[in-house]
Every structure is written in structure tokens, then in C-alpha cells.
Length: 379
Ligand code: SF4
Image 1: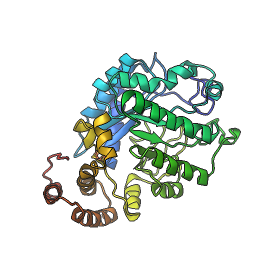
Image 2: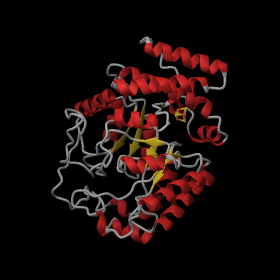
Image 3: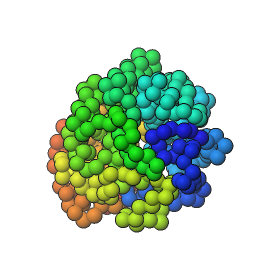
């Protein structure tokens, strides 16, 4: 319904097909994602109260959590839908969502209104105060982000930090994640028409400064960026990466790894590697690819999560959980080469777990995973 001038899904674009997945199609998408090895996903949906009311999103969440294909499970559904009411946020919380993500696009009010000339998203205050309503509705993990390139980056950077500071001051919980998307080329969108684009060096500097300013947050870099940029940013504070992503509606099921449907896509991703290639690349660069979703399932969200994160104790959970969930991936989905590197990494990392008891439990669980004796254990 919205007229966002930087996105091909804007209302005036008559060339891009509109598509709504049936629950059967949602199931098929989830199975395709599980077959790749994913344990979490993000729901993205357009704003359309008639065709896409909250009830539809809730139904999709239920379907997603109900699919258990082979050893697959989606254990955390993050939701990225338009700003809504406290009541609706409460319903999303009750449906068991992980993080509620909403990008601000730009914090600059005048630009915001020009960039969103029509539709409900035009309302700057309603959009900007969405996270307060989400928290009022009980959602305590929220994800912030601006679309770099729309406005002057210094203004956006300050706005982002002020938003984080505000959430912490008022609700006692800062952002669970901060995403750093940059404007991309898409159907009927030319990023060169926007004159606030930032180069790779500035982008790297912004990411590093976010890491220093908001040390407890998860910084997300998506497949919008290519391998080279992602490699650089991983060393500057990025902690979450996506892999094998597609932005078309229903773009996973029925397509091979090489086939990329372009008909309904929001933009083409720059990093087109498979999840297995991304996992292998992370390990080759010395990072442990973790598929952990333990905190949300153990109720470690909001201020409980924040305090563990700020004092560093969360590492006692993250480290063994990462090794156990990586082992699940290696056993169920990995290529032979990823498996070889992965198990070497798991072996080395197990030795680094400081507490004997924790190490012994993690070792036992990894052995059980290898022996197909799954117990879904987590710290
Ligand atoms: S234990 Fe660590 S890796 Fe696992 S969900 Fe919690 S913070 Fe994330």
C-alpha cells in the first residue's frame, strides 16, 4: 500500500507481480530452508491490511513452527512487518516470535515524509514509535536499522544510537540487533538517483562505531552485501550473517541452488553463495558458525539477555551451544569439505571451554548428535 520511493514493491509499480503464499506454499518454503540447514528465519511481508492482515502472519508463524522435516526445525521465527498496534504486537509475542525487526529507513523526519509520500508508512511518528509499542505489547527483543544511502549517514548514525539509548532508558532493554543495510539496485529503482550513498570505507567505519557504541547488540549484515564487504565487516563487529537468502516471494521451494527466480524479488542479493559455502567461509576465516537459538527458547530475552550479554557471561552459553548446533549442521547438511573443516574446529574449540563440567556435557551431546541420538539439549 505504501509509496516508498526506494523500494520496487511501492504501490505505483505496476510491473512487479504481487504474490501471497498459501499455507501449503509456506510449508514448502520452510522445508526448502530446513533442507539447507537453517534453524531460524525472518518473515518479510508487505503492508496490506486487506490481503495481509495480522491473522495471516500469525497463521504463517504457526505453520512454520509446525514443520519438522527430517532432522529439521525452525526454532526461531523473527518477524519484519510494518509498524502496528500494541494489541497486534501482543499477539505476535503470544505466537512465540524471536525478534521483531523494523527498519527506520531514515530518522530525518522531512526526508522520511518525502521518501514515503503515500500510504500508512507516511506517518513518521507512528513508524518511529513502533518499538515502544512493541515493548509495551511484551516484545522485548527488537531489531533496529536504517537504510544507508537515503540520508546523510552522520545524521542516521546519531539517530540510531539515540533510538538505542531511548529504548534502554525507557524500557530497560536496548536493541537486540542492529542491521546495516545499504540501498541496492532493484526493479525500477536506481540507487544512483539517491545522492547519499556511502562507500565501503565509510560503511566499515559506521559498523565499527556501532560495535563500540552498542557493544551488547547483535550486528547483522545480510546478503545485500558481497563476500568481500562481508569479510571485512566480520572483523569489525558483525555477529550475524544470513546465507543462501532470496528476496522473491516463494523463492526457495522448487528451485535449485543455481536457479534464482527474479519475478517478484525485492532486490537481487550480492552474495549468492549457498549456506554451505557461507558456513565454510566463516570457518576458514576463524569464526564459529552457530545455529544456536537457545536464549529465546530458554526465556533469556530482553533485560535477562542484556545483563548476561553486558557482563560477558553469555559466552558460557554461546560457546558450547555454537559447537553443538554447528555439529548438528555438519552431521545433517554439510558438504564433505565443510564437514572436515567443521569437525576440526569443533574439536579445537571444545578444548577451549574453561569449565570441565560444561565441556563434558557438550562433548557428550556432540557424540550423541554423531550417533543420531538427538536430545535437543542447550545451555
Ligand atoms: S546462547 Fe548465545 S548464540 Fe545462543 S541464542 Fe543465546 S546469545 Fe545467541
